[in-house]
Image 1 (cartoon, rainbow, N blue to C red):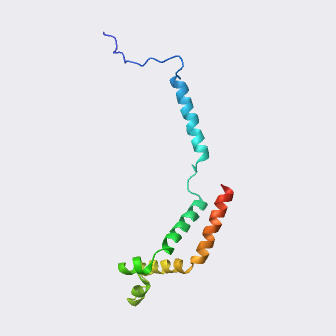
Image 2: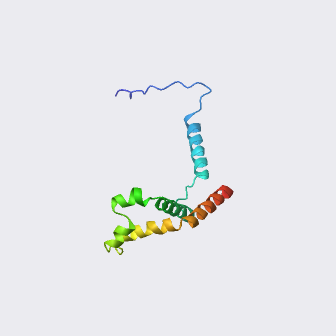
Length: 119
C-alpha cells in the first residue's frame, strides 16, 4: 500500500497565531458583536417605529403630483362610490395621516428625544 498523498502546508513563523487561538479569537469577536446589536429580534418599540415611518411616508404624498394622476384622489374615489373598497380605505388612510400632520410631527420629535436620551 502506498502512503497517503501529503497536502502542502504553509510554514508558520514563530510569531503567527495557531489555528486554535484564531478560532477562539473569532468566537470571542462574534460574542462581542452579538452583545451590542439587537440580536433579540423585533420588539414593540421597533414595531412602533416602523408604523411611525409608514405614517410619515403616507403623510408626504402629494395629491396633485402623485395621487390624482394615478386615480387615488379622494374626489375620484368618493365620486365613484368606492369608499368601502380596499382602494377607498387606503385613500382614506392617506388623507387621515395628512390631516394629522401636526400630531405626527410632535410624535416624531418625541421619538427623536427618546432615542437621544436612551441611546
